Length: 203
Image (cartoon, rainbow, N blue to C red; front, side, top):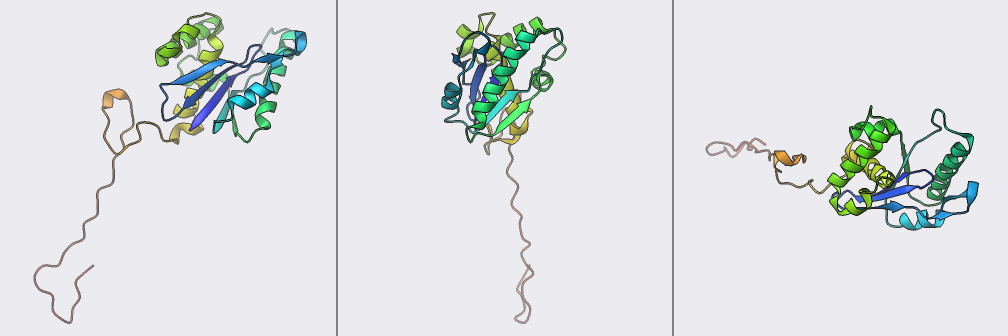
């Protein structure tokens, strides 16, 4: 399964992940259109990003305490733009609360700034090929989008989606992969000695 996750905001971040190769990830920011108060994610870019995906995951966010009216308007516009663009495609949408995916990433209970730094650190560890992007302090958005995608596969509705470790071989327990064991064949009991002509062998 190939999925895309969005972390909505003034700069909406995205991350694309394939369940068959979860160690590779594509992440970045959605292009913006408009200006001033109407600056928002570009729906055409979102649609293009979703052309090869099977599932979309969006952080279910709302107004924060002590958030200004203008900031809330901008934030709501970004969320609405993402959901509206996704609704125009055939890609199914799953919403996840910040509490849920942060708990899966072991970021729950951290302060806002501390959680952002921890998200970048974890994302760099999981996807070192994105270190150039993630080493920038302000690029916590793509890191969080990547962890949202990871949540879907590890603890969300996609946890039963086959991954790269779903084979018939036993994997090393230290890798953290699941162990897939084939059921043993059932053996039927064979009759002992010759069977009389008027009696059939037991099944």
